[in-house]
Length: 477
Image (cartoon, rainbow, N blue to C red; front, side):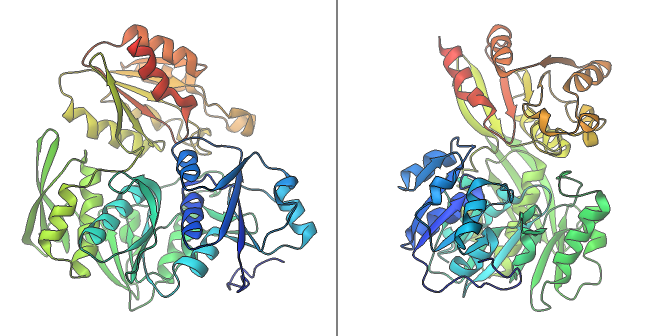
C-alpha cells in the first residue's frame, strides 16, 4: 500500500526492508543504519560504483546489480524507493502488484532514525556535504555522540552515517525531489531544531523550471521552520538574504562582513594549512587552522562553528575538531601521486562549484600546472542552461580537458549542452582547452602531456569510468 505523503504510515512490525536505488549516498547511509539497527536489508541499483558499493558490501548488505521484479519476488515488509526510480521501474511495478508497503527515503529517516532526536539540517545549492561533515565531526569530537546522514563519506570516520545515542542528528537536506510519488524537495520533510542555508542558485534543471521555482522551494522550507528554531544563513548571498528576511524563526547571518553575527576575518595560507580568523558579533572569536582549501570551505566551516557555539560546544573542542578534520571523500580528495603528478578528485559540477574548486586548489600548488578535467553529467550540466556560464569557471586552470557528456541521449536534442562549444568559448578566452569524446582519449592525452609537478583535478559527480585509478596505474607504468 502507498504511504500517505504527509504522515508516516509505515507499519510497526517491519523486519525486512528492500531499498530500490540503494547506491545513492543518502540511500546507502540509511541502508547501513537500518542494518545496524537490526533490520534485514537488501537493495538494488544499476549504477554501482565505489565508494558506496564497497561500503555497502563491507556492511554485509546484499545488492542486486540491476532492477528486476525477481529482486522482490519473495516480498518485503517495506520498500524504500529512491528518487532516481520511476513509476515504470520493474521493481516498483511488481511492488504495486503485490500490494507491498513503500515509502520515500526522508519518510524512512523520520520514522526509524530521526525520531526523538533534534535534527540539524544543512541546506543550500552548494557546500551541503562538506558543511554537514564538519558539523558532525565537531559534535562528535565534543562528546555529544551525534547521529548523521550525509551525502559523502567522512574520512575521519570512514562513514557517511552514524546512529549515536546523543540528542542531535545532522542531516544533509537536499532540494532535489523526494520520489516519483512525491515531487516535493527532500528537505521539506524535516522539522529542524537548527538549520544552515549556504546558498541558493539555479540547479537541477530536470526538476526546477527556473530560478523562481528554486526560490519557491526554499521559501516553502524556511516558512515551515518553527519560531523556536534557529537558521544560520549565508547573508551575503542576495537570494539567501531576501529569503530569510522577516521570518518567524531566529536567523543568524554569516559571511565576510563584520557587521554580521558571524564573520570571516583574515586568511593566511601556509600549505597544507589555512589559518583563518572568526568574529562573533564584531568581536574576535578565535583563530582556526584547517587543511581544507578555499574561501568557500572556510565559509562552510564558519556556519558549522556558529551552530556548535549555539549548542554551547567549548571553543577548544571546536578548534581541535576543525584542525584534525580530514575532509570528505570526493571533495578535493587526493587520490594519489605518481612521478610527481598529483591526481585530485572532486564532486564539482555546477559552474560555481567548478570555479571555486579550481580557485581553492591553485594557491596550494603555485609551482605546478593545474590541469582541469571536467565531465558534465548531471541533469543540469548536460543541458544548455549553463552553456554561456561554464567558460567563466576555468580561468585559473592552466590546461582544460572537457569530456562529451556520457548520457546525452537522455536530454532532448534542442536542450543539449555542447562540450565542443565550451572548448571553443574557452579558446576564445585564451585558454588551452581540448575536447574529448570519451574517457580513453582523455587518459591517453593526460599520460602524454602531463609532467612532474602537475596537478590533475578531475571533476564529476559520477564514477567517470574510474578515470582516477586508471590514470594512476598508467602513470606508474
